[in-house]
Length: 275
Image: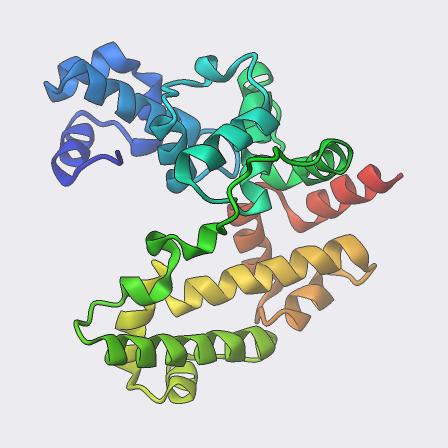
């Protein structure tokens, strides 16, 4: 459902950024790309859903797969019931954060200026499920058993034994990075842990995780930093250093880029929520 290479080219030709596609409306997209009206609706929805803070392409596709083509379609819906319907559709129980995202998009459909992100709905979801539980016919199979989430299946090798071996090496590298995230880490360092050449490791890691090792490590470091901002009184400069960031300025820039607010804004909002 994401824009194809040709569709991206046509948008660029017309001076349209992918993040701005939903501002055109399905009718304009239909005429600009000479595509079907259904395809125009999909491209509009794919862009509009990702205009919601913290919603990414995969969840945008999930919403489209459920038959929603705009935020307006979600008005009056219930995040918990949408989650229950989604789980029945895919045949597995999902990661709890999926329900947080359903709650987020429903809220955003009514309050488009609210900057809250999916993790701001976690407490609400926990309270609801504590009181109401889950449907009796909820799927028993976990989401991570689906083929698209099994990392072994993403490795581009034909032999099963080789695929299993490489998956084990990647898990070992992942565990090592999680343990040593606060230290200076390079691709050759992690490649040695996986017993692979740096070039080979970089390629299979990107194929499997859909991000580079550096991007993956940055997310781990930012997650640890957000926890320290919330649960400790350490200064931002100390937290940056403790989480493996060499420069406070780069930490603040990356935090804002990924979280949509500065470290101090995040801390103030989280602290205020505890009062």
